[in-house]
Length: 389
Image (cartoon, rainbow, N blue to C red; front, side):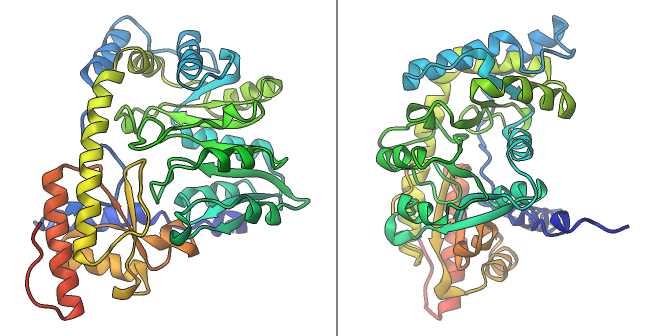
Protein backbone atom coordinates (compact mmCIF):
# COMPACT_ATOMS: atom_id res chain seq x y z
CA UNK A 1 0.00 0.00 0.00
CA UNK A 2 1.44 3.36 -1.05
CA UNK A 3 0.76 6.26 1.30
CA UNK A 4 0.16 9.52 -0.63
CA UNK A 5 3.09 11.92 -0.39
CA UNK A 6 1.05 14.74 1.15
CA UNK A 7 0.05 12.38 3.98
CA UNK A 8 3.49 10.80 4.36
CA UNK A 9 4.95 14.30 4.80
CA UNK A 10 2.90 14.97 7.94
CA UNK A 11 5.20 15.45 10.92
CA UNK A 12 4.65 13.81 14.33
CA UNK A 13 3.06 15.82 17.14
CA UNK A 14 6.10 15.94 19.43
CA UNK A 15 4.20 17.10 22.53
CA UNK A 16 2.20 13.88 22.33
CA UNK A 17 5.34 11.81 21.78
CA UNK A 18 6.96 13.33 24.87
CA UNK A 19 3.78 12.60 26.84
CA UNK A 20 3.76 8.99 25.67
CA UNK A 21 7.42 8.55 26.60
CA UNK A 22 6.70 10.09 30.00
CA UNK A 23 3.77 7.73 30.50
CA UNK A 24 6.02 4.73 29.88
CA UNK A 25 8.43 6.00 32.55
CA UNK A 26 5.54 6.52 34.97
CA UNK A 27 4.39 2.95 34.34
CA UNK A 28 7.84 1.84 35.55
CA UNK A 29 7.44 3.83 38.74
CA UNK A 30 9.21 7.08 37.80
CA UNK A 31 7.88 10.38 39.11
CA UNK A 32 7.27 12.75 36.18
CA UNK A 33 6.25 16.41 36.30
CA UNK A 34 4.15 17.20 33.24
CA UNK A 35 4.80 20.63 31.74
CA UNK A 36 4.34 19.57 28.10
CA UNK A 37 0.58 19.86 27.55
CA UNK A 38 -1.70 22.89 27.42
CA UNK A 39 -4.49 21.08 29.20
CA UNK A 40 -6.08 22.63 32.30
CA UNK A 41 -5.46 20.63 35.45
CA UNK A 42 -8.46 22.33 37.03
CA UNK A 43 -11.75 20.42 36.73
CA UNK A 44 -14.57 21.26 34.39
CA UNK A 45 -16.90 23.47 36.48
CA UNK A 46 -19.66 21.43 38.14
CA UNK A 47 -22.41 23.57 36.63
CA UNK A 48 -21.28 22.43 33.16
CA UNK A 49 -21.14 18.76 34.12
CA UNK A 50 -24.57 18.95 35.74
CA UNK A 51 -26.01 20.48 32.56
CA UNK A 52 -24.59 17.61 30.49
CA UNK A 53 -25.99 14.98 32.87
CA UNK A 54 -29.43 16.61 32.85
CA UNK A 55 -29.35 16.81 29.05
CA UNK A 56 -28.54 13.11 28.77
CA UNK A 57 -31.28 12.15 31.22
CA UNK A 58 -33.70 14.35 29.26
CA UNK A 59 -32.94 12.38 26.11
CA UNK A 60 -30.56 14.76 24.32
CA UNK A 61 -28.47 11.93 22.88
CA UNK A 62 -29.38 12.07 19.18
CA UNK A 63 -28.24 13.90 16.06
CA UNK A 64 -28.85 17.63 16.00
CA UNK A 65 -28.95 20.26 13.27
CA UNK A 66 -25.65 20.03 11.37
CA UNK A 67 -24.72 23.58 12.31
CA UNK A 68 -25.44 22.88 15.98
CA UNK A 69 -28.49 23.34 18.17
CA UNK A 70 -29.97 26.82 17.64
CA UNK A 71 -29.81 27.84 21.30
CA UNK A 72 -26.05 27.24 21.53
CA UNK A 73 -25.39 29.20 18.34
CA UNK A 74 -27.54 32.05 19.65
CA UNK A 75 -25.56 32.06 22.91
CA UNK A 76 -22.24 32.12 21.05
CA UNK A 77 -23.43 34.99 18.84
CA UNK A 78 -24.63 36.96 21.88
CA UNK A 79 -21.32 36.34 23.66
CA UNK A 80 -19.42 37.88 20.74
CA UNK A 81 -21.72 40.87 20.67
CA UNK A 82 -21.30 41.53 24.40
CA UNK A 83 -17.56 40.88 24.59
CA UNK A 84 -16.34 42.33 21.30
CA UNK A 85 -19.19 44.45 19.99
CA UNK A 86 -19.47 42.43 16.76
CA UNK A 87 -22.66 41.22 15.09
CA UNK A 88 -22.70 37.52 14.23
CA UNK A 89 -25.81 35.73 13.00
CA UNK A 90 -26.33 32.26 14.52
CA UNK A 91 -26.46 30.81 10.99
CA UNK A 92 -22.83 31.95 10.53
CA UNK A 93 -21.74 29.50 13.23
CA UNK A 94 -21.10 25.77 12.94
CA UNK A 95 -20.49 23.74 16.08
CA UNK A 96 -18.46 20.55 15.93
CA UNK A 97 -16.45 18.03 17.93
CA UNK A 98 -13.55 20.34 18.68
CA UNK A 99 -12.01 23.14 16.65
CA UNK A 100 -9.38 20.87 15.06
CA UNK A 101 -11.89 19.08 12.85
CA UNK A 102 -13.26 22.47 11.80
CA UNK A 103 -9.75 23.67 10.95
CA UNK A 104 -9.26 20.63 8.73
CA UNK A 105 -12.67 21.16 7.11
CA UNK A 106 -11.75 24.78 6.45
CA UNK A 107 -8.54 23.76 4.71
CA UNK A 108 -10.50 21.36 2.50
CA UNK A 109 -12.86 24.22 1.68
CA UNK A 110 -10.17 26.76 0.77
CA UNK A 111 -7.38 24.73 -0.82
CA UNK A 112 -6.68 22.89 -4.01
CA UNK A 113 -3.45 20.97 -4.53
CA UNK A 114 -0.49 23.34 -4.36
CA UNK A 115 -2.36 26.27 -2.83
CA UNK A 116 -0.59 28.10 -0.02
CA UNK A 117 -1.41 29.16 3.53
CA UNK A 118 0.83 31.63 5.37
CA UNK A 119 1.77 30.71 8.95
CA UNK A 120 3.95 32.14 11.66
CA UNK A 121 7.11 30.21 12.49
CA UNK A 122 6.98 29.09 15.26
CA UNK A 123 3.27 28.30 15.51
CA UNK A 124 0.99 25.48 16.70
CA UNK A 125 2.39 22.15 15.57
CA UNK A 126 -0.72 20.91 13.75
CA UNK A 127 -1.36 23.97 11.56
CA UNK A 128 1.15 23.05 8.86
CA UNK A 129 -0.09 19.47 8.87
CA UNK A 130 -3.69 20.59 8.42
CA UNK A 131 -2.53 22.45 5.31
CA UNK A 132 -0.55 19.47 4.02
CA UNK A 133 -3.43 17.03 4.57
CA UNK A 134 -5.57 19.17 2.29
CA UNK A 135 -2.89 19.06 -0.42
CA UNK A 136 -1.70 22.59 0.31
CA UNK A 137 1.68 24.09 1.08
CA UNK A 138 2.47 25.98 4.29
CA UNK A 139 4.49 29.16 3.79
CA UNK A 140 6.25 30.47 6.86
CA UNK A 141 7.00 33.93 8.22
CA UNK A 142 9.55 33.91 11.01
CA UNK A 143 8.72 35.59 14.28
CA UNK A 144 11.47 36.34 16.79
CA UNK A 145 11.73 36.75 20.53
CA UNK A 146 13.55 40.07 20.11
CA UNK A 147 10.41 41.39 18.36
CA UNK A 148 8.14 40.04 21.10
CA UNK A 149 7.09 37.18 18.80
CA UNK A 150 4.74 39.59 17.01
CA UNK A 151 3.89 38.79 13.39
CA UNK A 152 5.15 41.56 11.08
CA UNK A 153 2.46 42.51 8.51
CA UNK A 154 5.14 43.76 6.09
CA UNK A 155 6.86 40.37 6.17
CA UNK A 156 3.52 38.64 5.65
CA UNK A 157 2.73 40.86 2.67
CA UNK A 158 5.99 39.82 0.98
CA UNK A 159 4.91 36.17 1.19
CA UNK A 160 1.54 36.71 -0.52
CA UNK A 161 1.46 35.25 -4.02
CA UNK A 162 -0.94 33.97 -6.66
CA UNK A 163 -1.44 30.66 -4.82
CA UNK A 164 -2.00 32.23 -1.39
CA UNK A 165 -5.45 31.22 -0.14
CA UNK A 166 -5.29 32.19 3.53
CA UNK A 167 -3.33 33.66 6.41
CA UNK A 168 -3.65 31.62 9.62
CA UNK A 169 -3.01 33.35 12.95
CA UNK A 170 -3.46 32.53 16.62
CA UNK A 171 -3.82 34.98 19.51
CA UNK A 172 -3.17 34.34 22.37
CA UNK A 173 -0.54 32.23 20.67
CA UNK A 174 0.68 28.70 21.06
CA UNK A 175 3.60 28.18 21.77
CA UNK A 176 4.63 31.68 22.86
CA UNK A 177 1.66 32.95 24.91
CA UNK A 178 1.84 36.25 23.02
CA UNK A 179 -1.29 38.34 22.45
CA UNK A 180 -1.33 40.06 19.07
CA UNK A 181 -1.39 43.85 19.16
CA UNK A 182 -4.58 45.48 17.96
CA UNK A 183 -2.89 47.42 15.16
CA UNK A 184 -1.12 44.26 13.94
CA UNK A 185 -4.37 42.30 13.81
CA UNK A 186 -6.14 45.16 12.05
CA UNK A 187 -3.40 45.41 9.41
CA UNK A 188 -3.33 41.65 8.82
CA UNK A 189 -7.11 41.65 8.33
CA UNK A 190 -6.68 44.22 5.55
CA UNK A 191 -4.06 42.43 3.45
CA UNK A 192 -6.60 41.11 0.96
CA UNK A 193 -6.31 37.39 1.69
CA UNK A 194 -8.77 35.33 3.74
CA UNK A 195 -7.86 35.56 7.42
CA UNK A 196 -8.24 32.50 9.65
CA UNK A 197 -8.04 33.45 13.31
CA UNK A 198 -7.65 30.69 15.89
CA UNK A 199 -9.03 32.23 19.09
CA UNK A 200 -9.15 29.05 21.19
CA UNK A 201 -7.22 30.72 24.02
CA UNK A 202 -9.52 33.73 24.26
CA UNK A 203 -10.50 34.35 27.84
CA UNK A 204 -6.95 33.56 28.97
CA UNK A 205 -5.33 36.97 28.52
CA UNK A 206 -3.74 38.29 31.71
CA UNK A 207 -2.68 41.76 30.59
CA UNK A 208 -4.16 44.10 27.99
CA UNK A 209 -7.19 43.53 25.77
CA UNK A 210 -8.32 40.67 23.59
CA UNK A 211 -9.51 41.42 20.08
CA UNK A 212 -11.27 39.15 17.63
CA UNK A 213 -10.52 39.30 13.92
CA UNK A 214 -14.24 39.94 13.39
CA UNK A 215 -13.73 43.48 14.70
CA UNK A 216 -11.71 44.25 11.57
CA UNK A 217 -13.22 41.99 8.92
CA UNK A 218 -16.66 40.42 8.51
CA UNK A 219 -15.08 38.03 6.02
CA UNK A 220 -12.71 36.43 8.53
CA UNK A 221 -12.94 32.82 9.67
CA UNK A 222 -12.80 32.58 13.46
CA UNK A 223 -12.24 29.34 15.34
CA UNK A 224 -12.91 28.98 19.04
CA UNK A 225 -14.14 26.39 21.50
CA UNK A 226 -14.59 25.32 25.09
CA UNK A 227 -11.41 23.33 25.74
CA UNK A 228 -9.10 25.87 27.32
CA UNK A 229 -10.96 28.65 29.16
CA UNK A 230 -13.77 26.36 30.28
CA UNK A 231 -11.46 23.40 31.09
CA UNK A 232 -13.33 21.09 28.71
CA UNK A 233 -10.57 19.53 26.57
CA UNK A 234 -12.06 16.02 26.62
CA UNK A 235 -15.56 17.22 25.80
CA UNK A 236 -14.51 18.03 22.23
CA UNK A 237 -16.67 21.06 21.54
CA UNK A 238 -15.60 23.85 19.21
CA UNK A 239 -17.08 26.24 16.70
CA UNK A 240 -16.30 28.14 13.52
CA UNK A 241 -17.69 31.56 12.59
CA UNK A 242 -17.66 32.06 8.81
CA UNK A 243 -18.83 34.54 6.14
CA UNK A 244 -22.59 34.16 5.63
CA UNK A 245 -22.36 33.46 1.89
CA UNK A 246 -20.57 30.16 2.66
CA UNK A 247 -23.33 28.77 4.87
CA UNK A 248 -24.72 26.22 2.36
CA UNK A 249 -21.24 24.88 1.59
CA UNK A 250 -20.13 24.75 5.22
CA UNK A 251 -23.31 22.95 6.24
CA UNK A 252 -22.97 20.45 3.39
CA UNK A 253 -19.37 19.68 4.32
CA UNK A 254 -20.15 19.25 8.01
CA UNK A 255 -23.09 16.97 7.25
CA UNK A 256 -20.71 14.66 5.41
CA UNK A 257 -17.77 14.86 7.80
CA UNK A 258 -19.40 14.89 11.24
CA UNK A 259 -23.24 15.07 10.92
CA UNK A 260 -23.31 16.98 14.22
CA UNK A 261 -21.61 17.48 17.53
CA UNK A 262 -22.94 15.46 20.48
CA UNK A 263 -26.31 16.84 21.58
CA UNK A 264 -25.78 16.71 25.37
CA UNK A 265 -22.29 18.23 25.02
CA UNK A 266 -23.82 21.19 23.17
CA UNK A 267 -26.15 21.72 26.13
CA UNK A 268 -23.07 21.72 28.36
CA UNK A 269 -21.67 24.47 26.10
CA UNK A 270 -24.76 26.61 26.72
CA UNK A 271 -24.23 26.26 30.47
CA UNK A 272 -20.56 27.11 30.08
CA UNK A 273 -21.15 30.48 28.44
CA UNK A 274 -24.26 31.46 30.39
CA UNK A 275 -23.35 30.20 33.87
CA UNK A 276 -19.71 29.15 34.29
CA UNK A 277 -17.77 32.32 33.44
CA UNK A 278 -17.51 33.54 37.09
CA UNK A 279 -15.86 30.26 38.12
CA UNK A 280 -13.60 30.29 35.07
CA UNK A 281 -12.45 33.79 35.96
CA UNK A 282 -11.24 32.34 39.27
CA UNK A 283 -9.36 29.72 37.25
CA UNK A 284 -7.87 32.48 35.13
CA UNK A 285 -6.51 34.25 38.21
CA UNK A 286 -4.86 30.99 39.28
CA UNK A 287 -3.23 30.54 35.85
CA UNK A 288 -1.92 34.08 36.08
CA UNK A 289 -0.36 33.35 39.47
CA UNK A 290 1.37 30.32 37.98
CA UNK A 291 2.48 32.33 34.95
CA UNK A 292 4.24 34.93 37.07
CA UNK A 293 5.88 32.24 39.17
CA UNK A 294 7.11 30.26 36.15
CA UNK A 295 8.61 33.35 34.50
CA UNK A 296 10.52 34.11 37.71
CA UNK A 297 11.73 30.51 37.98
CA UNK A 298 12.90 30.35 34.37
CA UNK A 299 14.90 33.52 34.96
CA UNK A 300 16.59 32.02 38.01
CA UNK A 301 17.47 28.64 36.47
CA UNK A 302 19.10 30.16 33.39
CA UNK A 303 16.26 30.25 30.86
CA UNK A 304 15.27 33.93 30.97
CA UNK A 305 12.54 35.22 28.67
CA UNK A 306 13.20 38.36 26.65
CA UNK A 307 9.49 38.90 26.12
CA UNK A 308 6.40 38.65 28.32
CA UNK A 309 3.88 35.90 27.61
CA UNK A 310 0.51 37.38 28.61
CA UNK A 311 -1.92 34.75 27.32
CA UNK A 312 -2.69 31.05 27.00
CA UNK A 313 -0.68 28.65 29.24
CA UNK A 314 2.83 28.88 27.83
CA UNK A 315 6.36 30.16 28.20
CA UNK A 316 8.68 29.65 25.23
CA UNK A 317 12.30 29.76 26.34
CA UNK A 318 15.53 29.77 24.35
CA UNK A 319 17.46 26.77 25.66
CA UNK A 320 20.02 26.60 22.85
CA UNK A 321 22.91 27.25 25.24
CA UNK A 322 22.17 23.83 26.73
CA UNK A 323 21.60 22.02 23.44
CA UNK A 324 20.85 22.98 19.84
CA UNK A 325 18.70 19.88 19.25
CA UNK A 326 15.49 20.58 21.15
CA UNK A 327 14.14 17.03 20.76
CA UNK A 328 17.31 15.51 22.15
CA UNK A 329 17.38 18.07 24.97
CA UNK A 330 13.72 17.54 25.89
CA UNK A 331 14.13 13.76 26.01
CA UNK A 332 17.29 14.09 28.10
CA UNK A 333 15.44 16.35 30.54
CA UNK A 334 12.63 13.80 30.70
CA UNK A 335 14.92 10.84 31.33
CA UNK A 336 17.38 12.50 33.69
CA UNK A 337 15.25 15.07 35.50
CA UNK A 338 11.78 13.56 35.27
CA UNK A 339 10.27 16.70 33.71
CA UNK A 340 8.22 16.54 30.51
CA UNK A 341 8.54 19.62 28.29
CA UNK A 342 7.83 20.17 24.60
CA UNK A 343 10.74 20.59 22.16
CA UNK A 344 10.61 23.86 20.24
CA UNK A 345 11.03 22.08 16.90
CA UNK A 346 7.45 20.86 17.31
CA UNK A 347 6.35 24.37 16.33
CA UNK A 348 8.52 24.79 13.25
CA UNK A 349 12.14 25.36 12.31
CA UNK A 350 11.99 28.78 13.98
CA UNK A 351 11.38 27.07 17.30
CA UNK A 352 14.49 24.91 17.22
CA UNK A 353 16.66 25.41 20.26
CA UNK A 354 13.67 26.44 22.39
CA UNK A 355 11.53 24.58 24.89
CA UNK A 356 7.85 25.18 25.61
CA UNK A 357 6.71 25.08 29.22
CA UNK A 358 3.03 24.84 30.14
CA UNK A 359 1.79 26.25 33.43
CA UNK A 360 -1.53 24.42 33.14
CA UNK A 361 -0.49 22.45 36.20
CA UNK A 362 -0.59 23.06 39.93
CA UNK A 363 1.76 25.57 41.51
CA UNK A 364 3.22 22.73 43.59
CA UNK A 365 3.99 20.64 40.50
CA UNK A 366 5.45 23.63 38.68
CA UNK A 367 7.70 24.32 41.68
CA UNK A 368 8.87 20.70 41.69
CA UNK A 369 9.44 20.76 37.94
CA UNK A 370 11.46 23.97 38.11
CA UNK A 371 13.51 22.52 41.02
CA UNK A 372 14.36 19.42 39.01
CA UNK A 373 15.05 21.37 35.84
CA UNK A 374 17.25 23.90 37.65
CA UNK A 375 19.34 21.13 39.16
CA UNK A 376 19.62 19.45 35.75
CA UNK A 377 20.79 22.64 34.02
CA UNK A 378 23.33 23.38 36.74
CA UNK A 379 24.85 19.94 36.35
CA UNK A 380 24.82 20.29 32.57
CA UNK A 381 26.62 23.62 32.71
CA UNK A 382 29.06 22.40 35.35
CA UNK A 383 27.80 24.70 38.10
CA UNK A 384 27.53 23.69 41.74
CA UNK A 385 24.58 23.90 44.13
CA UNK A 386 20.87 23.37 43.89
CA UNK A 387 18.14 25.62 42.60
CA UNK A 388 15.70 26.90 45.21
CA UNK A 389 12.78 29.23 44.74
